[in-house]
Length: 241
Length: 52
Image (cartoon, rainbow over all chains, first blue to last red; front, top):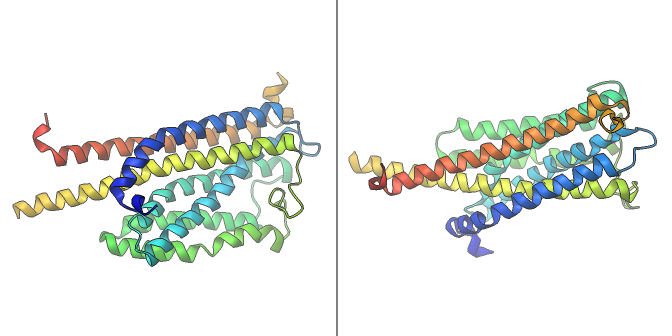
């Protein structure tokens, strides 16, 4: 693994793996969508509206998974001075923000027919909205500070402080029992869903995750090359100074 | 036609799927284009004599 801590080795590996991750991710999302929309039976309470679950829940899981990954990457940049830690966190953030926005938007489209309202200020919805704001603040922070090492340090701190919100989102449905339904899949007594409904959800979630890794590779390569470009330009300017 | 009706929930189910597909596609394409752009710029800066 240490071999790939070197940005050049990582670039070479990422370049080879990217098409596979995109291909596998898109294929799984296609299969999951077909199973979810066509094969899974309608819910006995929610009818066909429940099918929104297959785009809502994977996006919501990803919003937390991406943030958790960013926190791990930021911590490794802090503790081990891992050269790719800041690169990974910065590259992941816009994808995380998109997943969070999708979780909120598809949740509203599900809430309107089921709850009769687009939005309520319940624990789950509010903490997920705060997550979106944290993502936006994190992205804005990188843009706001010109000096790269200072920007990286501030971004790490923001990312790690914001990580407090992740367990809050997860447990919000237990702490504040309001409109959002409780934990259905990750329960100690097993998922409360028949296999015909659960399988498409798991395929979809895996597809989203694999697609995200492909995106992360592309965005990390972009960030590494952008840094190289900055150095090259500084050298060129230096030569003529 | 009942498949497209989504049991009367078509107005909610389809926008959720279309929005998700659109957002992920745009994110993928934008990320890919940004990479292509920076790759070109790095190649130009490393071999300026190759510039035509």
